[in-house]
Image (tube, rainbow over all chains, first blue to last red; front, top):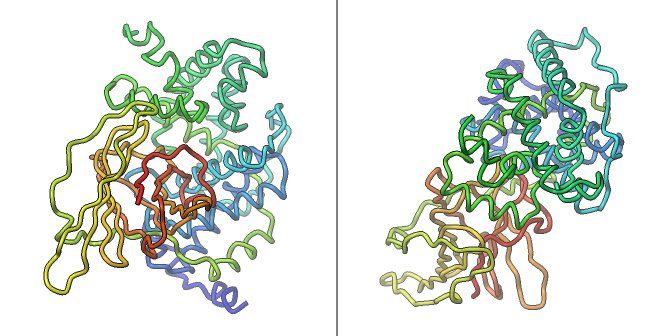
Length: 201
Length: 228
């Protein structure tokens, strides 16, 4: 509990630091800097984990495992390869896929989550979070505009952790067709999103 | 549209499937080798990766359960930092290594070669083991001096985004044992990492590509190995 007590006494200046500067402190083993990173990105991390596995308890396990792995490998963060947010999400994504493959646990084949409301209340959102939410909505919109067959294989692969051969078997399609749909879908998203993808990441 | 695109790309969609993590491990290894010689696929993959990263950020946002914060932060003190910092390269590591070795699929190099090297008065004897690089380009050597062991790699492919190389130790009749040695490579594919705890009693030192932070058990095929 002593750690939590010290966490509550987090120095205000830490919360004013950019993620990249905090990571320099995490590199030195500064747990309070890591706490700020957690506070900034835990919602988006949990959202991704929940999106992928569809179960809150499993999503919690995945997020915990991801953040602890980031704590252990904090010295490896390289700002030249993307934002801390992307780094966190990459870890969550990898951990979820790991869990699917290790435990033979799979999310539902139906990965549509349109019925999941945006549950972050507005008063908790900073201007930056609002901007990120709006950008995320644009990406979702671009995804929704894809033909169903292209969106479906992308979602099954990326959020479901299925390989193209598994998807081909599932959908009773030739493997080449599945890969072709993936390529067409990503190419269209690339055009739809344009430079925005680089801003987001 | 380029001829490459008209043809569906060299790997006929492999760049997209790779960016989505949808290639089987063996296919992914072959595609990584292919990338080394194909600028078109490298560019396509880079563009697709921006898209897939954007997809990660695009999920509907929900609030993390309150108990999760306590759970993660409480566990931090008990979680040792496992990152392996790049060890200063000892003078005896400065010697040139053989050129990169391009190996296909199951091809393997000859078993490791050990040779004693005297470091000078008072210094522990050093042995050097050439590692086998499997299904990829690159070369690696394991240097052992007393209780200190260090793995030096050259021209290895970059780990996939969100991944890192992890070192494993295997003793006789034992499964691979996780180590704290996680490492990345430079843009030239070079790197070195200290193997914590030394290699006494170890039969094989292995490296796999794992998600950031490492894994508790190997989840991808062995990328390189050194037999002791």
